[in-house]
Length: 312
Image (cartoon, rainbow, N blue to C red; front, side, top):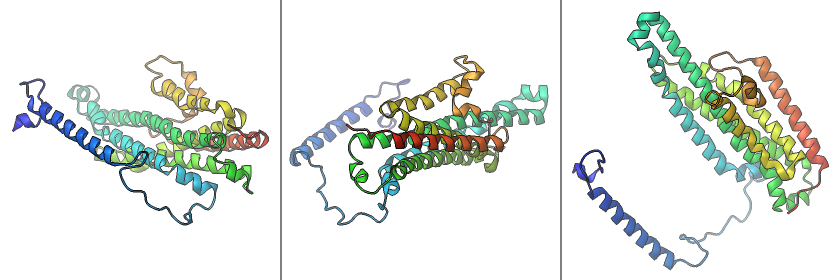
């Protein structure tokens, strides 16, 4: 029976699992051919259903429409970052044990000091993972905002431009959806990390780990502000916005391995954040970063308002 469950590459050569997988593949392939032959060209396997006679009450304006279009992507990002954060939180116990469970370290600096060092290492690890989650949370925010010009270029916004929907309403809708997407994704990842870390022997409180959310949320808003400026200034080259998360990952997460100078981290919004949750949230820093994001969004709207529509 053991041979039917695994191949066991480091033991005996067990061919039965391979034969079973090949047989299953052949069966699935045959079923696929049969089903494909029965369906009409261009139609799905399931019969079409008549749509709604009227639109949902939630689709009353651009904001609700964009949220509806981004719903699937947003849910995927929230769940993905939450799972990532939870998995990183489960490593806290292992990281802490590396120091305070070592007999040699305990003899040198004492058990209490070893436990303190272990907690510090755990918080430093949490701070690094928080940067990664903030960068990841910026991705759905950027993607949602870039839809403004891409939807306009594809002609999807012509019906809105023909009606009494102002540019401020459209710009504000895409910006709001982008900001909410980024903040919600960051919250899911941080909260997941906090919950995952509660299984550690010397668990760190959820409130302290949630410092990462309050500390890095302004950096996501600054990214939204920078993208807003790009939407109005460089509509045809707006894809350069993806440099922000890519460079942030290289300079902060991999900067130590690549020997990047310290000042290179300050070229990205994530590099200005205090090392939370290891340190306390610098609320004055939070204030001026939020103010900076608001100014950038207003500048972006001013540029967007004055430019021509992007046509295909």
